[in-house]
Image (tube, rainbow, N blue to C red; front, side, top):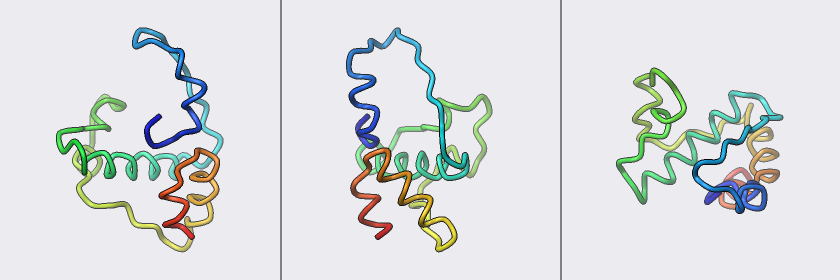
Length: 97
């Protein structure tokens, strides 16, 4: 919710014990890129976070300690921009532009 303000209204009344499903309506590689971006941003504040260890049974070495900012490349910038705008990630929207 901190980085994807889109979820703020949907999740604000939930407790830690509530289950919820997220349906992804973008390319899964783009969503994975977004999660890597969020992980990188959060590691600036909390270096111990291991985001992919939370969402994967067996984290891969390239994902579990992502220390560099994911690169925005020309082929994916439009998809990232659209997703960032929809999910309300203003800093990423600015970077894409």
